[in-house]
Structures are given as structure tokens and as C-alpha cells.
Length: 294
Image 1 (tube, rainbow, N blue to C red):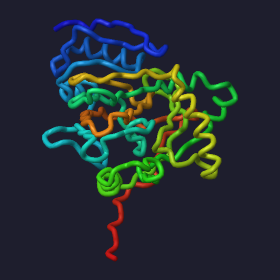
Image 2: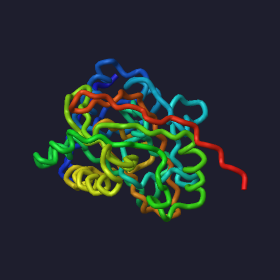
Image 3: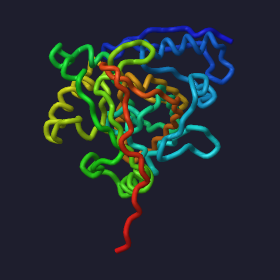
Image 4: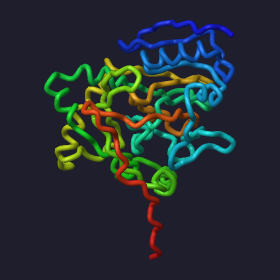
């Protein structure tokens, strides 16, 4: 079995780890897995090749999406199909932060890729935190936020199709989650601080909706600053891996009626810990009430 070979590239001023000479699968040596794990901690994203779920399992226990469940015959694969509703994740987010122990790693494979468009952009949320001026760091260190999968979908995605709206109402929010997370989480392996935000944030604890929105935009602007991001142009069978505890990402919705399918395996995570040592808590986990007959 080949040893991983690291090649550093710079894209939009962000260092990217490109690993060559490794066939991804369940038979990788412990040394190779350890090396890849360290690269993930340092660089936050990117590999390519296949055998997705067997490989993902070597990084930790697999976990399905809490409301959409896994594809048939898999432990955690989520099929993101632009033609079936819910496949266009064109909002800045960290995967599944509406639960407490959201995934630590995501492994995404390109299955059907448009001839043009459909890139994914990642942001390094540790770099975003480090770029904050000192007064904003102090403020962020002391803030907590409510994350939920129940939000105003029409306001966020006004051009969503009827199928996408139906998927959101019937599947994505079939169980309502509401979790309180620190705005700054301390990484359990590196000790680095990063901003824990994204589109599942509904409000900041102790602040009004209006004040929350204003402060959110200030902090989120550091996350989405170009110097903290990297953009990937997909090809079929590409595999991208990222540390979901220290990144956000955005699927660019610029491919019109072309078909795009990516499949994601997720590795179970840990409950975030804030700068003050407190852990995130689940506030709500409840089945969505059935609609009443007219």
C-alpha cells in the first residue's frame, strides 16, 4: 500500500493539501489513516478518489443525517440530488449544527457533475476567528447561539422550487431540533478556536432577533472573506474531505437545469466546548406536529 504523498497548493491565498498515491478504501494502513487525519486537522479540506463509505469509516463512526436518514444499503450516505429537492445547499453552513454532537468529518463524492458550475466553496473558520480584531474576539468568546433546522425557508430561498419546499417541510424538518452552541468552539484535537455559525443560527442567546442578525453579519463576514476560502471545481468521482468542526461551506447554485448529484458520508462528532468550558446543549428534539385537516 502506497504511503500518502502531500503536495501543497495555494488557491485564493489558502493552503490546500492534495494527497497523491493513495487508493482510498477500508484497507488503508493505520499509519496512512493517521497521516490523513493530521492533514485534515491542519488543512481542513480536500482529497480525491473513491470507496467512500469504507474509507470514511476509518476516520470514525459513521452517522446518518438526523432527519433524512441514509441511502438504502448504507450506514450514512446522504444523496444530494439537485433534481429531487434538498440538493442545492446554496447557503453558508456547517453540516448539521442543529444537533449537539454534529459530524466531525464530511466525505463528499461527485457522482453527476454539471458541464459548468456547481463548485463548492469552503471557509476556514479558525482563520476567520484569528482575523477578528481583539474587541470582536472578546465579544465572540462570550456569545452563544441557537441553531435549528426549522427556519423561514421561503425567506432564505425565495426561488426554491415546489419540490424543494416540499422536501424541506416533509423531510428536512420532520423532527425539529434546537441546540445552543458557543459562537466560538475550542477544537478538541488541536485546541484552536473557530467561529461556529452558519445558516442554522436563528438568534444569539440573550439578544433580540434584530441585534442577533446584525452581530451575526459582522462575524459571518470574516468567515466568507475570500482570503479565508478555497473553491473546488468538481469532476466525476472527486472526493472532498473536510473537518466540519473548523469549516463552513457553500454549494454554488449556478448550473440552472443541469443535473448535479453528490453523495456525502459523515463521521460522528463530539459536543462542542466553548471558551468558558461549557458544552453545547440540546434544547428541543421533537417530531413535527402533523398538519391539521382543513
